[in-house]
Length: 411
Image (cartoon, rainbow, N blue to C red; front, top):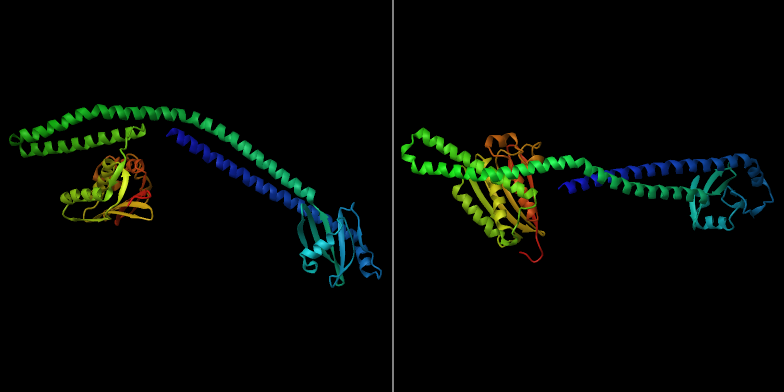
């Protein structure tokens, strides 16, 4: 149990750290990219402002210079008239103008655009030259792009590395922090187990003695004496049940709760439980069954019966008048057992905790019990490969659902 908790804490904190670091990388990538992008655009604008007089002269000249190649240029440009016809320009990458013309509509291009030609990256910016034309300026940004990508990958690798280191350290420190908790839990577990074992025998003797007195000395006791003995017997029964429940939980904590798994006809099992409860149910409560026949599931028959007993006992105890329903059906690859009642219900704030040990809502305290039944029910359900859930509304009753995954080939 403690290893699972330690692992879950380590995974939780590591995932939180990884998400935080990835968020940091994302924000950093955005800020750096945005800053470099602004700087590149500003560089093209500055070049345009500096050279715009020459661009106007080229635009109005009768003899245009055409396209010149200059591989040493960092900023290249292409001059167009108002109809989008190329006039003149200087480019650093031969054939780039033709590539742009083949892939874009130059006249309707946005003011700023980033384009990729193979593995090379370029920033293009369109500037108006009045009503007579426009100019397309460009700059290769491959180096800047690769720099940002390289920084991002370095940060990504460092994030993974430090997350692994953090996970190892977190696992170690979680183990150290849980040592005193483990020792306290083991002492409590040992006390519960030892106390349950020690109490079991004297309680059994006490219960037998009271039962013997009620049988042998019945005629010699006054009505008050018989009433007192009956109350003592009931309390002894409750104490015996509590001790047995504590022993069940202690065995479960030590993984000593054995489940004898075999093919069980759940339909017949639940029908038998229904019949037994039907005989002793209160008159004011209607008890119904909705049991689908022929459902087979590999489980511990005795434990499943104990599970149904716990849930039905609760249903009858918290239903003064109304209806209790025991249901079983198989559909869509699952087997579902449901116990429904129209009793007092469970408050929404109590519902998440009803399977915790010794937890009792206010209305449960009035009905007695130690708050262990549903904890044992959950252990039994999970031990047989199932899951137990509860839904309830105050004043409208409760529904307890046990779900098992149906194996292929079972009916």
